[in-house]
Image (cartoon, rainbow, N blue to C red):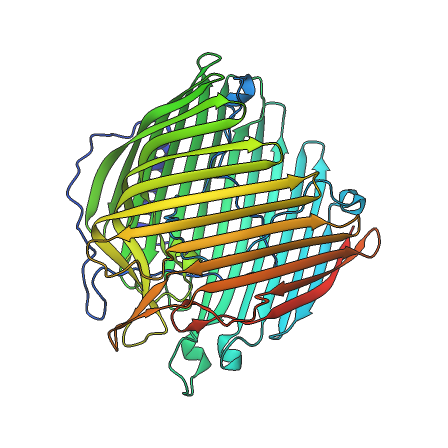
Length: 566
């Protein structure tokens, strides 16, 4: 793909700005014009709209969520200064619209067969004309150079309604390489994703031309990074940068360049200085070209002893948006206090704030049935007051947390009009408040059985939106994994969502979706040292529930197959 002169100039500007950020030269006193309270309304759009994109429920069940905050070590040590790096955008996870059934990963004490081989191929088939194929391979090129790659295909030739008009297909390819020395590690990642599906939420019965309702999402990404691996160094760091390009079937594209820096410096045995910096340069083309940038610098200090861990600092965020005429900088406090009165029991409280970056790709990851040319705007979390307790009592771990947060541009997803098969993103441009109560408890028995039960309750106080469209008021999950013997492994989970509402703007009616109960089971059985069989059962209750209005999901679906390790 050839680049125009303006694009080349734009990339040159990206390089300069990103470098400046990582050198710590972001100006915290930049001009701060008032941001519009809501995106401009254009003909054919609804004021203050949000769109959510939902991923298909995977038959392969990924790892379950862990506790919200890792319990810090009671005794300060050099290892305590090590950072856990997560280079993900900050999503708006309040009442997360995504439904991704998962089960806990099997405990570490797995069969001897799994520890003998690093590579595998899997193949399977099931109802709804489903086919599944997956492969993973890794190797050591030299003593300090390793590579690995994976490929996955999952498709259903027919869906829950109208046969092929609700078919789905996805292909994912990933390549990784690492070069490691005693002091640092260089890594590179290349990925390619292709998803194809149909907008099958149309009124029935009617004849549809499949090509007019077909959507295809293609994502290509490349990322490189360097990080410290020497535990004896007083300075810890990680620097990663990468480019992601998204294209769809409606001539929309989004080029996103993100750079992330994490660093820590040990001042004393109990005192650590931390720095996080992010730079995102984004160009979205979906009709008019929109340049959207965000820069973040977050310096903090952390003090720890056997009784107290306290973190304090500031989070300075600058964002620009050409289409919405936004150019502003905000500063948010960062305060977190964790007290350990006895044993491994913690009580914590704090306050923080941020600007949650919303992109076309992040919205599509929540609700794939997004309409073309949706308005993109970031969500400001003005402040979030939280408190709770967490701990471990023998084989039982727990966490409870209460949060009360204020947002601007809080968003939801609702059906468009007159075509209700697609979704807008609906924003509340004024202040919105969200109360969240979360509880989680986990139990482990001799690395043979593992279970986690979690529940989240949400209360939304909105200014302009009638409701938090398609966001639940209650969500829960119960995930389990069990090793029967060295050959038989079982994972199971239960998911529950309720309280979601959507509005049909054609009939002007608000619809409350039926509660979702989703039960899943997976069984793995080793036939020999290298061969195993698996069976996955999804949505065992068999309800064609709707996570989004007019989009029923598959009922009981199953997948069975074989796996070969080498």
